[in-house]
Length: 282
Image (cartoon, rainbow, N blue to C red; front, side, top):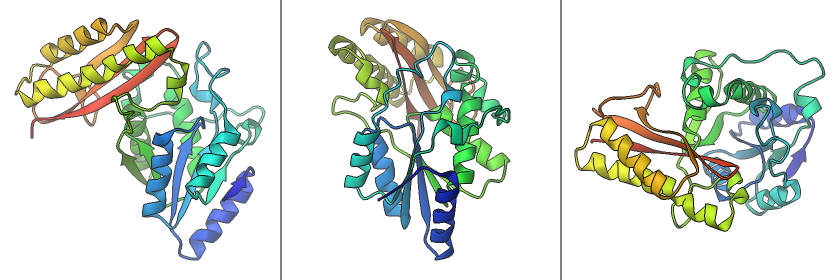
């Protein structure tokens, strides 16, 4: 496994790999790796000849009162985990290499970024779109792998790639969950023991939404009310949203006609968690 810090070097190395006919898979991360991240790297290894992980805690996607300063940074542990699964390259740039002094150029994210996370975290998706675009330019790959847990982020990135005609394919991989259903997240380590137990309310609410749709309940207001009741019973400290949305546009729905997505963002203590589940009448 080769650890690279220089944008010029990672570009040179991957360009060489591609010139020899090898396919390259990219897994962007902010570190604090868990089994969900590792599953993306393992998928990249299965689908491509070369697997590349990036580790960079991106300051521009954090708001002024968010957890950038305390976001877990566990580089040595992360590198050991990646070494064990035979990741080929790890790109670990510094903040100065990504955002030079006076940096003022950003990607204006697409319309799908305006709702939900975009409303609650102004500027978040501008930071996400910008860093992902930069990583795609610095570490040229054939395929980039992302987890479905960050559903809206994935929608933003896919739209950006399509509308800017970027020469990379986006592969979306299933959410990896703990044995009890909690979606794996780097922020789970913030949870106290009691908060960790209460956090299972997110998964129970999503499962119940799926059960209702399977029972031919299509009235979104009824499903959302049932989700909210489960979250309040958990109890969740605060619900940012618990909604049923269109699978493509993420616009709110009144009725489920085909495929929709249940999305939740909630807070336990100082920890904010998100999760989602696809709902289908098929």
